[in-house]
Length: 579
Image (cartoon, rainbow, N blue to C red; front, top):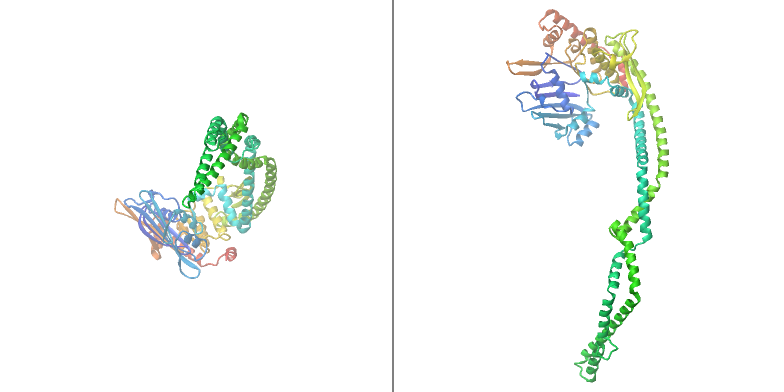
């Protein structure tokens, strides 16, 4: 719950501290005093959008700080620690959490969670577990089908939430399979053309049967064959110079003669030279033999081999132009063949996905049926409970019915939930979205929250003028119901009705003072005669009126008696079930 909230530079409020705490807190004040700024400040702490217009004129920034008591362990503490903040332990079960938000006059916003700076989104995450806020806009929101469905699901508890979880899993599975199948069918022609192109390219490569590096080897071979005559003359000249059949001295003969000359003399100093000349002679013979083989190969190749090499190079050239190189063509052959197998499997894949989609659709139908059944059961119970609450809110003949109809499938199910209200005897129940007045809608909304609090408790409820459009006996019953709700949750209500404020255990007033040009508001806790005077002002506009003061005391006595009375049996059962 919220223990305390401090506001600085927010709207007309220069500085104020709101002592809140458990139970029912009523916030009253004159029109324009800044009651709405209290809800605005709370909204900033809950991560709502920051607006520079909330900054007090002349102030550089607005600041809101809040102190919460939260469970020492649970989703709130876990989210705070995840954001780098800390909760301060109070005992084994409870901890203190500090939240803060500042907004500059330029519109920049900064948030702090557990003593550490954090994005405003973290405040919103924490708020989901802490507070439910109801204002005029929330009454309008109750007119939407999704809000009515959400209210029913909250009331339905585990049976509905479990069925909804199973349904959503089935829904997302069906959608994923259906999207995959649809995409496959829509791209079938494109994929067929891709398969034809791949098949042609793969066939071309397979027919050519290129070998790694073959194009480089053929280029060298072609160049050699194209210059065969010049190569033959060079090789023949080199061969003749080394070893010739002609009557001219060649290198082999000259080296042999030099070796023999040295060997004829018996001088140890010349022996190494003779050995070296012998080795040179052997190497000359090897070189001459190699040149003879080269010349023989040239003679055998001739023009026909050059023609064959060029034909092969032409085949490989087509692959190189398409793929970049022979090696790239071989890589494409591997990847293209795998892709072609995948594309050729389209028919079987369509059949598999169609069967899988049928199974997913069957699972979705079954899950939707279970969810609808759980919602219809909850709807019957919710209608009865809300009717009882609404009748206690000065609508003695009202009837509330919750209908669950069928609509198109979404992630939330196939159910259209409609709250119907018959405000008078004999009236045909009509959707609250069209047939309820503002005052009736306020009471229906409050009745729903009172009922749902028994099955889905929320730590704190904030009501911003939930009593708009009502008065008299209806207002008294609204106050009584807020007090009843405060027995299981913290309730904070901004109100302009004494009949509502009388039931609060904590009464705060927002007061304004003016020096003629600047208005500043502050917050004060009311007790004793000060509270009686505020109640009299709310009743008649005259805080000193004896008649109004007498009426105010009567209302306060009624509120005190309600607070001291035992909890009704149905509320005791709901509270015990929660615990």
